[in-house]
Image 1 (spheres, rainbow, N blue to C red):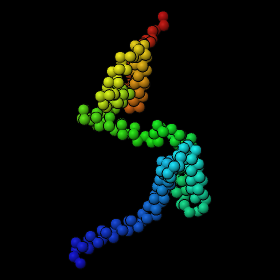
Image 2 (cartoon, rainbow, N blue to C red):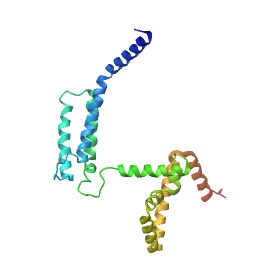
Image 3 (cartoon, one colour):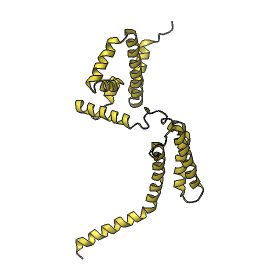
Image 4 (cartoon, rainbow, N blue to C red):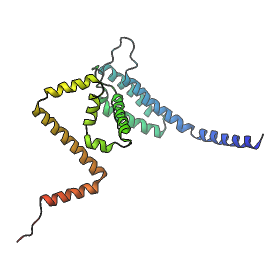
Length: 221
């Protein structure tokens, strides 16, 4: 065996020994991952057979039954202390969020996940990057607020653009002023939260300066 082959064999043996030392941790991770996948499978509704109705009641019953079955592993001695802690926390989250998780199955037009919303946000960010060349779009959001999403939706095709024109022609001026005030207020609140979280010292100094200018103190006679 040549020197190069011996060196490669030694490195391979080191990798194998490291993998063997991680075997127990890897088994734990796979088992905990399976819990999440099982819960996701129940909430997705893919278990339904042909003609079987997927509703809030059926999903809730299946989720409760699975949770009771899995919770038995906490006391049967098959799990390590770390796995017991993780499983207990996972089941606690499911119990606390059950009323919110099982709410979208009785309505066909209600999305079961936020995947579509995430794809829309990604498309908006990609469009902004192509226009400005910047990766961070915080300043863009702070300047235009929710109008970013509105403008992108109306401009997707010609039919929506024509629909926007028709709505604008019928829009009442009083209602328009009210909607514009609501949008400006929401955008102002978003800007204040951003400045307080990320530029706190400058924001507080600006508030103190405005307070001094609005309510100056006078010496007593």
